[in-house]
Image (cartoon, rainbow, N blue to C red; front, side, top):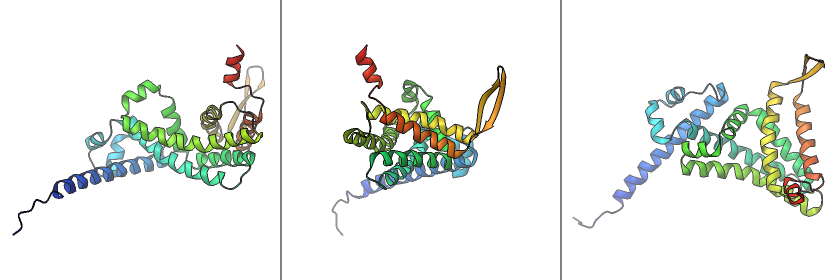
Length: 241
């Protein structure tokens, strides 16, 4: 009988345990995503997520530092899907102006089709960066940063190409990409509410309807105006002071 050592036994066990852990984490994130899509972000509770996976809530806290980390990693799933949609939209044309239009349209379409994405993204953005870093592990923050930057890089590349071709006048494409993403999330809420508030006469409010098409057209027009405007970004203003 051979007496040679079998060093693969230990690593195999470790690898299997790591694989099981990754699988369980993926199950928990998928369950969270389903609850987000069915009920919305605010109505998704840890107890409900644990029940959907068939585990005790304490097990969730073995895999995630807390609710903020779990929600952040669920947002990563949405962002990965959004990045694919943006890449596909940008690939339909080589003209930067047309690419920007299609990127905004793809963003609107995804946001309206996945309202929980908008809620989750806004919830994360509302947290001060320092607070989020205290509640989310470094590895989870890295994954979230990768997912956000992946989406923004598609937009930044288009804006940069437009600036190089002379179609756009932008000093800082990355800054504009971030601003369009942040403001776009807020405008998408208007599309979901589908109501405008104005003043019928002094002190008398008026409620009117706004359509998805109006919201989409406004976001496209705003993006084009900001990209094609004179180079008067915050950086230019700062240099002028």
